[in-house]
Image (tube, rainbow, N blue to C red; front, side, top):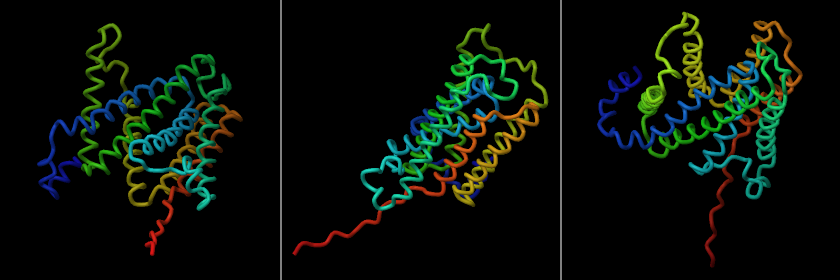
Amino acid sequence: LAISVKLRTNPTLLSSWNLIDSLKFSGLPACTYAVQNVLIQVAMQHLSPLEFNLINQSKLIWTAVFVYFLLHRRFTLVQCSTYNLLSPSVFTCNTVAMAMLMAASLLLSAGGSGSSGDHSDVSSTDRFYSGFVPVLVASVLSGFGAALTQLSLQTHARDASLVTAELCVYGSLFLLANMLLQSPSTTSLSFDGWTMYTLIPVVSTATGGLLVGAVTQFAGGVMKSYSLIGGIALTGVLESILYQKALTNELYIASGLVVASMYLYSSYPYVAPPTTPKTKQQ
């Protein structure tokens, strides 16, 4: 739909498109996003909603790391020797933000069986290896895919709607091929067990993605962080109400760490130092 609208305003949108460049710039991130989604589904079966939401925010760290290595965009965590004297407050805030995210992840990973919700009967081992590890790997893949997509959009100046469509198509083909290669006893294309409620997370996730994109585009990254903070608070409230169990102290502490880190990271972004003109030697 978005491409159809773009074609009306820009009829030459597809004139420069070719399959080789499309696979080169969108094939790998599409596969990473597909694997990421599978890992997320596995993790959600072994973690409470708030635990998953909090640990998933560690993708902020990996996005910054991969953007630094692939696009050479600095973030204040790696500037301690070059820029902290010019702007120590920015360096301190962003370093603390990264440390808060890592501390929250470690706190939740070591929380044991004290999680709230209907996952209290999950053993600590299953919770760690089938819950924490998959969502952490998914966060790494999310950061890698985001950096590759940003490289495609900014460095190679590709259209955002076209890249989005390519990611959807290639990701779906990757998952479909994976299902076809598996034995019939381990996979099935049956829709048994599907109800109208099955569409709720699909629609809500898609709508949330559109809203986050709109907020980022029209209101900026700081307002986006506020919306994500509100999402964390809403997740905690709904989890407590739906499961009728009080949140653990670890979740309260981790929530505070993640909320504070997101605020600091978005409020104090990296600003390049002013360039001083070189004086000509007499």
